[in-house]
Length: 251
Image (cartoon, rainbow, N blue to C red; front, side, top):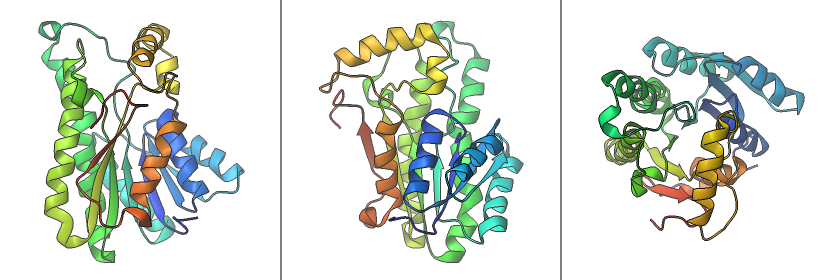
């Protein structure tokens, strides 16, 4: 129960990796704020049915007002805000294609969520963190930022931006005792990915061949790293990115 009574906001928390993170942090004692564009309330009810303390907030992370509402809802419900997990991102629905075929709209839609969305969420929780003397932010990036996967340049670029933002914000917010780290998962058979059978089959086979641990990666494989960065064991670590991919990339 290393997170006993801590309040954790998880964006994109209603399904897949996000819900697995919610569940694990709750098991470690955290009170959970599930933020998602859809089904946030249902996910919170599912957590409550297991005896956990949780609320759901409908939110689009690309909306400035929505991100502010998430922070306000956490403070209204629990009177505190200790951890932000920036998990919301566009991935499973993107169409893979050569970079010269990407449109400006392809870029803008994914940048709005994967990069600007994380920035807005960080900015929204910062006043609460400063008021209470610190906090933790865990940005979910991706192993693609280091491997440079082809035919998804816009996605790869956004995840590289997350790694760089993590470093830059860590240097700015150290004096506020706000620790910011990143977890970079490999290709994960999440709920969203499984809804795209072509992507799941093609990417899964390719990913397994490149791993030291030759099996599919599942959402629960990510949660331990997130809990570590949220907990007391990482109290002197900031600005770092931990790759969790079964040994596909040694970072």
